[in-house]
Length: 62
Picture (tube, rainbow, N blue to C red):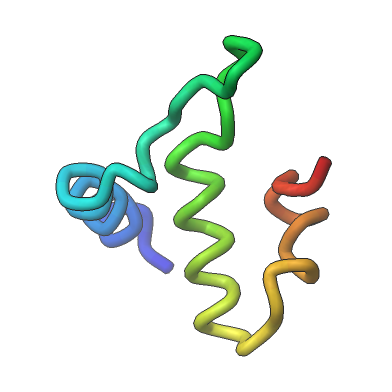
């Protein structure tokens, strides 16, 4: 994917959906970045794979 397209998607999603913003958890540690969340979502849609398969790639797992 072209970088400018990805950044446009990132900007639009973070402006319209609070889920994609980086927020601290109950211990104050920051959660996943918007880049990680959107990369995981795009990989799931593009390759029709479950979230578990993107955990290692996007560092989403515990």
